[in-house]
Length: 445
Image 1: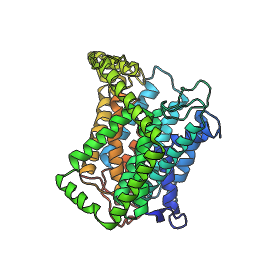
Image 2 (image 1 turned 90 degrees about the vertical axis):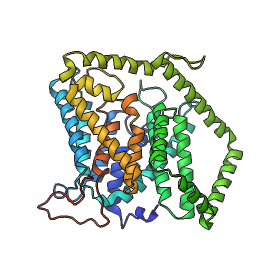
Image 3 (image 1 turned 135 degrees about the horizontal axis):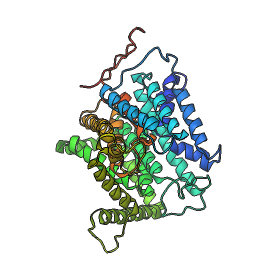
Image 4 (image 1 turned 135 degrees about the vertical axis):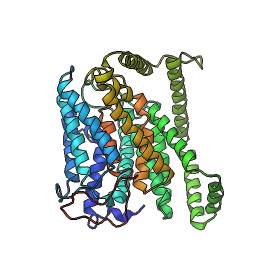
């Protein structure tokens, strides 16, 4: 990790671009901390809108409308195609009403993607460093929020409690978990590309701390996503000869120092905070019980005597029934209409609400994303694209477990992936003349 990237005098533009992108990519932990913990600003969607406007302003370059950078054209066409279809349905095949929030969703997604096309490829190094630092800061603000929340006690799900009246009790642990995953993955990738002893130790403990945050969130999708990331790594990157290489590398002087510091730190933590370690093990036991509940709900097979119905899983089972009903009706062609039914399974909802065409665009978009992500895991291009590949793998669980195909929780990360994942990077980027609005980056073949 290159700490010189945070020099505001020499790297101001890339820092503001990166901060703006991070605020859109993973800004909700910051929003909840400022709005609900520090009590700054109104506890409403208006505050979120202002936050995002500030992020877009930070991303606005001086060459606006004059210079563009080519994204991954396959992902761009499929992604924008689905957004266009869903927006058409929102305007003309909509039985739910045209909410202001939906207009805002499309406006912010469009503006974010448009500005990303102006961001130079050279931002990749600064962006990953900013993603790590901001997500780590958000993990620390979570700890502060929990310690100052009188309604939270050890053993409960880790999340910032919302301050607006009638809000979801206990906050949103899925936001907490995703921030933990983002911090953990970015720290590990930076760790593999860093040489300084203290920097590597700092990144290691940051990743370990983030893993603890993920565990405390009790978000099943993040647990499964983390497992998928590990599986992808072992399938595409792990080789038996790497074990011998790693063992030999341990005996290097710098690595020995790092190992000793890590062991001392872990020993101190276990002696000083043994109760916290036992608490994390308790969270894992709760997760195991919930997985047994999901299996029982979905299959009817009761693997443990304590297994009970999981009502969130029950909703997804009934959603599959709606998918089958739509498949064997005339609505298979055009779908039921914009947000006709909430299935909590985005990939199925794209079919139920938008028919074959919407499903083909949304499913194809995610299939190609998976192809580019796995290709990146197998043959890394640079740290940023490797991070985005693992992020998509962890997010892919949500396609079958929660959310809607229009949610910004999907499309803000999708927009960054469209811009940076699966394109060829060069060490020295040269701009073409203004007569050619497309810069030199080209999509991977």
